[in-house]
Length: 277
Picture (cartoon, helix red, strand yellow):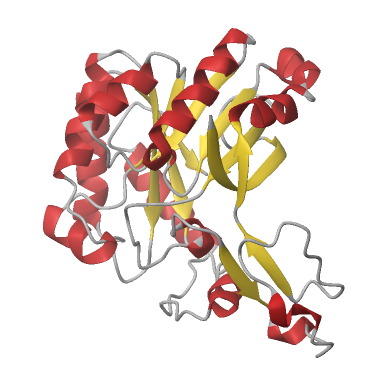
């Protein structure tokens, strides 16, 4: 089974318990205005061009997304997206098995949205369990119910992105409403799967007390939610937008003090653990 990745990141400690390898699958059904991984959105390979690194040697003029052996000496151009097999992914992940074993870690599928490549993601999860790995998946929850239910059989932990509580604002900010997302969150709760609610806080968009209150109400109503993680906005994606020739939204970053105030406010309304992601 083959699929398209844009990164495999090792020694991750923020994508589930223990030391983990996070596998980033390409493609996402959402278009969040604040997305910090714009290279994850398209389902196809893309060329990223970093003008400040270009020496003008001209070697890259014939570069296409189908070029497998291209190397830019100055790293000015790169192909984002690599077609690999699920066996390749497992082989890479298993290189660090001892770290998972000693720390309680494992594999995390992220993206993009892993469920957009459902068959590929499912195959990786199945093979991961065959190797005795703890499995986690970071998802926006926008996927068919049957697909969510199927991957849940082979997933120990869901890192569930909750971007906005209001359906209409969710559609404005991400391109889709959150009705299906909330249904899938309830489904995972019914299936008694461990869930960490990951909540991006974006200045000028969802940084509202009524949104925080809804997060607390949701967390308090679903017994499978074992934690809430607050994700501050950061501008790391700006360079990537430029490399893809796209325009990113201008958003100011919060201070640590502002983030701590948000965490304290949410923590005051729930007994569930709340921390910064």
